[in-house]
Image (cartoon, rainbow, N blue to C red):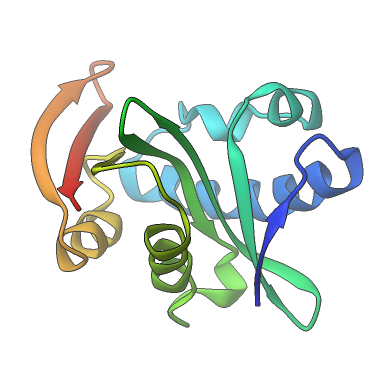
Length: 150
């Protein structure tokens, strides 16, 4: 089941963090860099981020999360992650489909991921996203940006 998460609630923000950290640790290993901003998040930074969060629950346990902002007809996916115990169950796709179906007021979706995160790159391409460009963040870290017209 997918439902909105009130990220300003400290208990819910902690639940998100408890899924986010293990998930992004997997990405950090894939891209060989722990300089991923979500690994540095705290309950406070999540509560202040201004993103809209939606969670996928299995038996009332938060298993995956997507967060977005919509501005100027563009939906920006800030986070999309699944707890490693629930990888390969289609949760990321269900969350992506949910926001595309249930949110209004946008014509384009944008998202970025680590350029060495091949599973995420394949996921976005498989779901209709086109690679826009790559941005070098540091000597060892680059991001790949994608968009999708709706």
